[in-house]
Structure formats: C-alpha cells, structure tokens
Image (tube, rainbow, N blue to C red; front, side, top):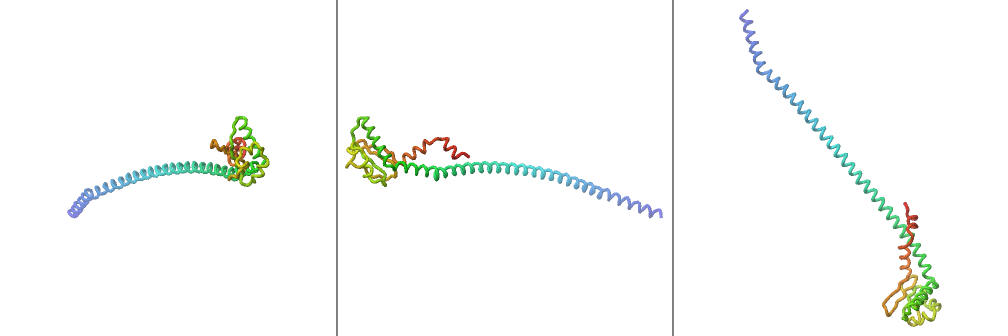
Length: 208
C-alpha cells in the first residue's frame, strides 16, 4: 500500500513538473499577450482619438474658411447687385428723363435761333468773316428756322439756308474754311449735363 502511494506521489510530482514547465510559461505568455493587447489597444485608441481631434479641427477650420469665403462672396454679390440696380435706375429713369428733357428744350426753334445768333455774335466780336454751315434737327423744317434768322447769318450760309442733320435736337455749326464742327446737339448737351450734374443730388437718389 505504501508503495502504491509512493507511486502516486511520483506521478503527481511528474504532473506538477510538466504543468510547471508547460502550463505556467503558457499562462505567463498568455498574460503578456493580454497585457500587450491592452497596451496596443490603448495606443490605437489614443491614436484614433488624436486623429479624430485632428480631423475635427481640420473640418472646423475648413468650415470656417468656407464660411468666410461665402460671406465675402455674398457681400461682393450684394455690392454688385446694388451697383447694377443703381445703373439700371440711372439708365432707365434718370437718363431717359434727362434725354426727354434735353430733347424737348433743344427742339425749340427759339433755342436753336439763339444758339446760331450767339455764334454769329462771337464771330463778329473776334473779327472773323467766314462762311459756315448750320445743321439743325431732322424733324424741324428748315424754313421755320430760316424765317427767324437775321440777314447777317443768312448771308454766311450756303444757299442762305440751314440744312438737316441726323440728330434730334440742338444745332451743329461747321466752319468750312477751318474744318471745324461746333457740336451743340442734344446728345452732347445731355452728356455734359449728366457728367457735371450735382453729386449730392445723385447721392440723394441712389443712397442705400
């Protein structure tokens, strides 16, 4: 009986030795693997968090930049829209009204006569004796102007008559000997008025 127990003890010692030599290192290796896995997982998580924060910061920066560009573009578009509206108002209202006003005034026979007679007086004051041609708007009959001109003016005109031109108001005077044309037509007068009209009036109309 004693021998049997002694045999069991030997077997147990052998088993213990095998377990110690095989299982314990395996357990230790398993523990090390688990610990390494934890460390690696922690590192991966930290790296993922860092990348996420970096992406978040980059996205926020990109959104802010796009917002800035959008706001600048919107501001520029608003300014361009307002400027376009001003030009449209000026072209369709102001310029149209100005053109009608100038045309109405510059088609008056009295205005045309005054312009021609003033030119004749200027020549006399300068001591200039020279023939010239007077061109009037195409819609005004020449005889309606000829009948109101002084003999001094008529004597300097070819065939003692004004001629018709391709404009709607005012007058053009061509000095033949000097190849000079004095243009006081409605288009020229309109441009001069539009160019030198009071700034505060336009600011009042277009102020936003």
